[in-house]
Image (tube, rainbow, N blue to C red; front, side, top):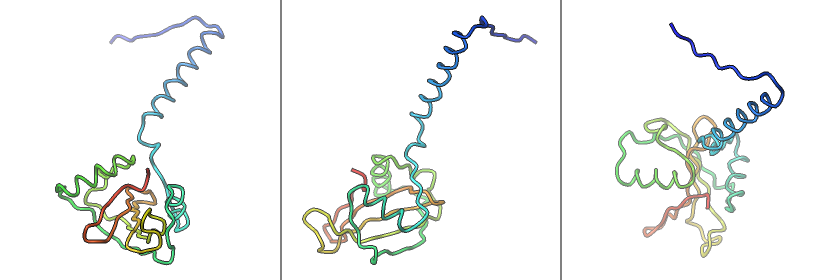
Length: 149
C-alpha cells in the first residue's frame, strides 16, 4: 500500500497562504451552489413580505390555502412552468409527485389592473421553503409570469 504525503515548509507565510486558498475555495463552492436561492417562510407575514420585497402588494384577506400534489408526469405545460421557476432560481424537480402547500393572494398593484381583481400571486411551499411562485391572470386570455423580476 502506497501513501501520498504532502509536506510544506513550516512558516507563517505558508500557513497564511494555505488558509487563504482554503477560504477562497470554500467561498467559490458556496457561491456556485443552489443554496443561495433557498427562501424560507414560516408564517403568513413572511409570505406577504416575500411578495412585497418583489414589488407586489396583495390583499391579505383574500389569502387561500390548499394542499396539492405536484404531477408525477411532466407534460409540455408543466415543463414550461418548471422553466419559468428556473428563471427565478427555483428548482421544482426534487418535488415532483410530492404534496406541497399552495398559498394564493389577490394582487392589488399589477400594472393596468390596479384594484380591478382577477390577478393573483401563488406561492408553493414545501417544508417551510418556497419552491415556486407566480403571478397570473384568471381571465380566459390570461397570463402567468414569475414573481421575481
